[in-house]
Length: 525
Image (cartoon, rainbow, N blue to C red; front, side):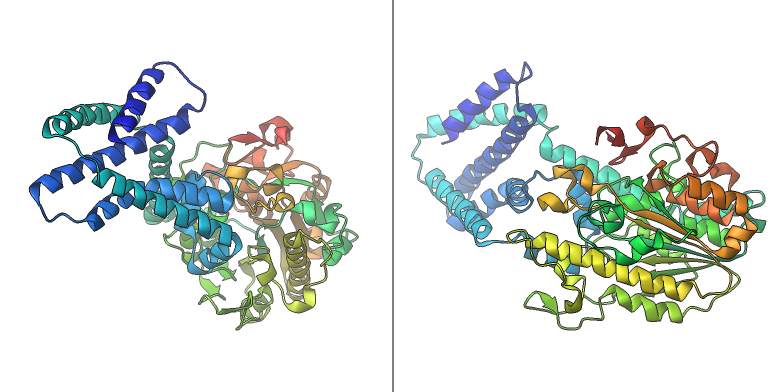
């Protein structure tokens, strides 16, 4: 076995001189092969040192060296795609409830069987290695040649599918950590910006963040099912503006909202750690800020979203525990439905100058857990029940938005309500929002603005401009600019009139708009 693998490495080393098809994949195979063989070399050395060396240690060493391989193939079997930087960041940012739902959605007897076969094969390979009979001369010669070949190729293949993902994930994670650590510096810089403390219009401004909603499955955007009866009816309200060409800037919640809620976007060169958040800007301008969330506060790692929310003067986190499952539903629901946001709104002490951010659970997978049984209206998709579950969750979100709107529209001095989704969902192909299996549906999102009568009367010119901009192109990393424009907060250092959708300076060239953090043009979709 050792000689065969060494021959493969020699052949592969020669082939690496010229580009070959599938080079990245083969580079990873060679890299992991080197690791495994070096582990085997360690096994031989340990056997010579300790006569009592056991078969169990052989297995542990081989399994240890095989972990990256098992992770890659395990993810491929579960998600039908190779793991990527985005996948790793999503894992770091997840929480126990999301992990439980994901495993439940992607685990099958077939997957368990495949994993079991892999472990059996590894154990059998270790037995073969253990039973090899070689003379001391042959063993020494093979070990020396093997050592040199593997060390040289290991260095040559150090940049490969897995190591690049690990390195890039580390870079992304460090960028987020820098944002968290630069919090005080940003706030001090805000205080020094001329005029910010006296800027901003009085009134109550509301920003509602949806979850995993694609406009492709919303009746108000032309979907065949009536999944949005309230949203559709609001199009007859002259103060309600539905934007028809909105995309998300990324495929996952943290990445999308990190840009949407800060001065950083795909079109500027602002460093993330220096990009003030909408909450920081509102605080500096004298607003009372509130964060209401039906999402779990923490994942495996703190994120910029955690930091942004923490700056709010009042925070309400509805989901303070995971819940208990039985037969695919939570026993302690409706504690975890989005309707629990409604009594939280009643608890707010309203003032004359406020920014309220509401973060819904929306259509986060598992879809069937996002709505009560009374909203299980769609059930005729035959072998595609996941579409029924998803459409029911969109229907329920529409009802929640209706109730939120009815509560807030009666508030004195309400100025605007903005709704958008963090990202879409590749629901037609049952791909969720895995960027490794990207389809445009994952980034096509709803975006709408309600402007109160007082806003219309006081800022009639802006009101008219907003209504006329409903067919302009938009990505949700410009939400920060949108909110600053509505609230009239002056941040000269971060002022970007070309990114305020109703501004005459707005660059509406379709070719300039991008998604997936700048890697894809929406014009290609």
